[in-house]
Length: 166
Figure 1 (cartoon, rainbow, N blue to C red):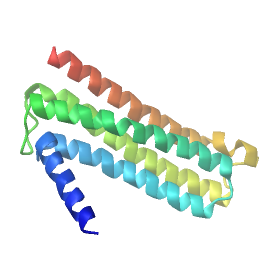
Figure 2: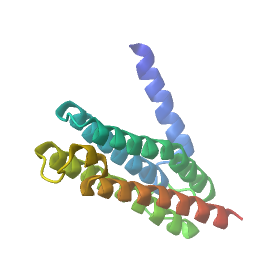
Figure 3: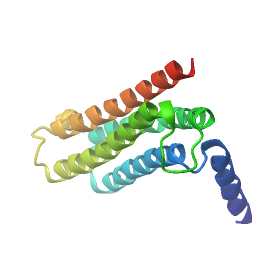
Figure 4: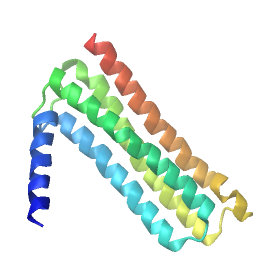
């Protein structure tokens, strides 16, 4: 039990060192909160649905978003190194990267919201006429579109960071 406290403390110190306490830390944390929310909704859906095709397709999307987290962290760590921030002001050229990261976290939060709506529609049978089509229902496609926007935002932020670092 004590080891968990110390490992959490070490992780917090590492985050402070790598991400600072300013805008880059908040951009990273915003993405993490949205990812956690997506997974919370997915867990709620797993206990309330019998539609395994739909649930499995949403798990795959959750995994895509989770796979992007190390890239988001890398962007934030590199941005903190280049444009240090310990306050609310977005430093210099980093504004474009911060904007992409903010949009990305917002897109992920919207994906979680779309998942909640898709789960609700799926559980009451309001959208899907054929249960075999549930993984391709309109609400499921909305979640996919949002997740694609998340991936695109991460790619744009990486490209902008690379461009500005040169």
